[in-house]
Amino acid sequence: MKKSRMADGFKAFAGKEITNTTTPNTSNIPKAMDHSIESSRNIVQELLPANQYVGEHTSKNAIVLHHTAGGSADSSIAWWKQSSDRVGTHFIIDRDGTVKQVVPLTDWIYHLYVASKGNKIPARFKRIGSTYDKHTIGIELASYGPLTQKDGKFYNVYNKEVLAVEKLDKGHKGYIYYEAYTPAQIKSLKVLLESLMNVFGIPRQDHIEKIFDINDDALQQRPGIYTHVSYRTDKFDCYPSKALIEMLKSL
Image (tube, one colour):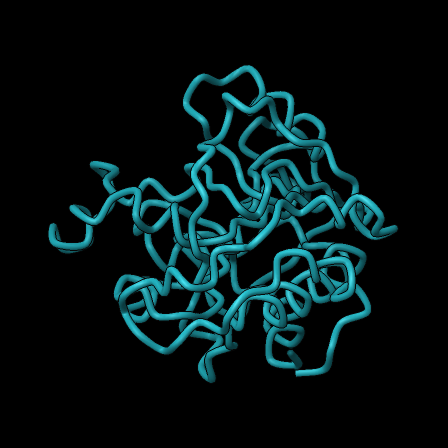
């Protein structure tokens, strides 16, 4: 893994490398708040109010990719701000590649909710509950997600037409068409992932294709990069985009 050009912006919270264990390694809790990220030209800091995330310093041993199933990054951030559930992710990447940080990396926010009634995973993992949220870094891609085709056009869940469409060779969660993640998003995500992996000692697992379904490594809290569907049977994000898979394999 090559050192990212953003890595210098993360030096303030570099800690000891995470060991390959199913128990989160508390030795990599950032030693300082991530104020240095403010100077990065690649990230816009737009932190949520302090009562909108959990102000508890925790180690991080995995990165979880999501997509918003919505419009712009700003619209998602606005929704998080008005919610009392402390729901969101540490970062969100808009369609133009703009990266916004809304939660300090020292702290955590609910972004997985493995205890969902619709989540068909073994009860022993559901009982772990918020531990997954505490020890993972969440990244959202602004995207509507699954699309429905009608009369040669493609529509999102809000019945609005979407022009940027990716057709999958094999369906994902019952859908063949998804709003395509943009090249700018993929590029920004790669830079961000390289930086986070470098700082937190998070590895990339060998079988990337397996993170687009329930993943035993994710449920066992093993270090790595995963998606929301690695933990949840009732979610769609992220879908197995060819560009996303190729980028992840290049890390």
